[in-house]
Length: 420
Image (cartoon, rainbow, N blue to C red; front, side, top):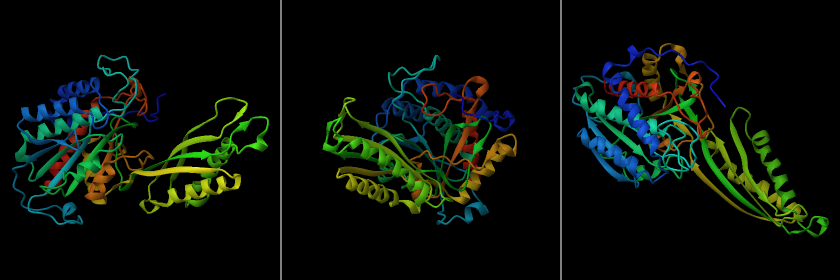
């Protein structure tokens, strides 16, 4: 199913500098190579080896093996900076003599069997780049190459972070704990996500919450099984579970401020072995999403209150496991303005910059944004005219590779403007 309701905007190639236009064939080649060899979280060894090989070819200083497969490249600019622009002066952190901007790209794939009939389809059964991370790596590589060849054009230090395991269990936090934001200390960070919910030629950037917090739960309802014709002798775990599923929907409907956005979804419910047997146990699992960081801790307590109350009323018991995955992805206002101002120079019309682009999807880029000011933004990549608009995590996901060069141009301009 095609999901992009907007027609792609035309792209003014002249807004992409010739040196980056010249990289487009390599961008496509790298992206397709990575697409053919997808790897799951913390297993991205082929990907990491390819990235490291390219960085060595270009004499770019880098460290490998961070949080298992992560890589950090460091590129020093040589330009002298006589003054600091207002957008940087207003940031709420101390400006060191040598400012540091980080660029982050995630590397992992998903446990999905690819259904695309293309020459570069996945060669690894059951594993697929179905979210654009192959493109993210290609964009970051090309950005690193360009900056290494144009060190006289910027006056600071750029760290390019190639991160494992965004899809789970999360590689950002262990990379931070390993010190990727230190030595030299990072002042701000930017990252992008190729986004098939926006058409090619658009950029989605906003201040504040862009993506939601991700929390999850598993619950086992413990009843008393028996004959389907004699329910009075049982405690029916299916009936208890059904009431819990319905009641959980009242959390958002009646406990959350209507001005706020939140989701409580039960995605799995398993019980029973035969049509005439009342199941003694039922198992359910689900996810919780919200934007407001003040809600952290609330949903877990409220979900358990509801489960406990319904179980008590039916003389059932329960076992609940609730955990927090990622906090909300919240952009710093001034770094978001930096990205927005750059995007306005790259996309063809102001209509191409989309401010209201929130999604209840989650991202562990959020941990980087908790640690330092930064901005995560969406780069439109859908093109229905080429049948390239299937949603993320779909077995036929693919994107218009024209977006790759746009991503490099935006990153490079952000670097130049941040240090200008």
